[in-house]
Amino acid sequence: MRRAVSMAVLTWALLMAPGAQAAPGTAAPAPAKPSAMQPGMTPAATPAPAATPAPAATPAPTATPAPAKPTAPVQPPTAELLPGWKPTATASIDVDSKKKIYVGDVLRVRVAVIARAEISVNLPTSLDLGDFSGVGRPAVRTERLDGDKTKHVFTLRIAAFGVGQVTLPAIPITYVVPRKAYKGLDPNSPVAMPALVITTKPLVQQISSVLANEPHPQLKKNAPPVEILVEDRRLKVILLIVAGVLAGVALGFLLFFLIRRRRARVVPPRPRRPAHEIALEKLVALRSAGYLDRGEFKPFHFGVSEAIREYLGNRYGFDSLELTTTELMEEMQPITLTGVAHDELLKFLLDCDLVKFAKYIPPLADAQRIVAQAEHIVHTTKHIPRPVDEDDKGSGDDKDSGDDKGSGDVPTTEARRG
Image (cartoon, rainbow, N blue to C red; front, side, top):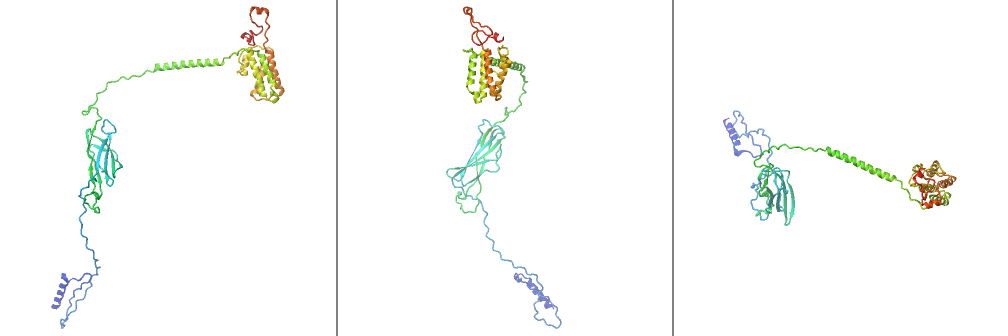
């Protein structure tokens, strides 16, 4: 019994030893559980203790490759730039031809950078402008130059809020050059190219104050009262009204004079031949012209009417051709006619006007009667001069009896008025 216990303890110690662990992935044998020996049994080679249920076997881990040898972190190059790769930057203030710059005026600052075409040039997002303040966003313009160079122009709009000699600090410009611009740097190196910085020179600008009595501002004294003169326009208005009235009166007299002069009847000159001879010749010519045979009633009546109108004007001394029928009868009203009445003369003129203007076509008998009536008017109203006696010739007076005076057919005013 004691020997069996000793064997069990030894087996457990061997199993728990560090060098006696089972290989990974295999189940370790469980220690044999001691069993009680019956009396009379000799100790013999006891079999290995029964295996107790082992935990579930875990999958064998896969072999991982050995880690690579760590490298040093990438550092920016410390080599210097080759000659000709560093850009040049200049800055200038454009005052737009202003003689003085006051507080709050907007100025333009032009930053010009000349660099190779392979260099990337930029303006920082935020700038330290000192006593100046940026207005709006900068404008960028790029221009290609000879010799594989590029000119970058940055235009900034700034406003000053200081007085006197105000300094604009140096403006930084960032640029990035390719790897080949560094001396002794491998072009295939994975090192990232850093951003380099160049700056312009500071600029000084004179800023004036809006106060007139700088540097010791004081309020101005109160101005004395000013007399306000109000123009009296009453006299001017009265004069304008009077001038307008006088101009209207003058214009009225001028129009009256022109109208009266236009209406003035021009007395036709005394015809060389008696008026009735001229009228009768025209009527005979109208008869022989063949108007009635061709049915041309309108020109026929027009000629008859014009012959009688001309005869009346020459016979009684007024311009009759430009008068209407009504105006003609007004001129004939104060004249005493012999052999024909005023109503008969008016009817004759109206019959002619009916054919002339109303396009009336009269019968042939009425057309022949109208020319006969015209000849009757001429014969009954013609002027027959009185024979001159011997006594009249001796006295040298040239007088006519009846309603005429002097030679010719034109009567005097006393004769026309009766």
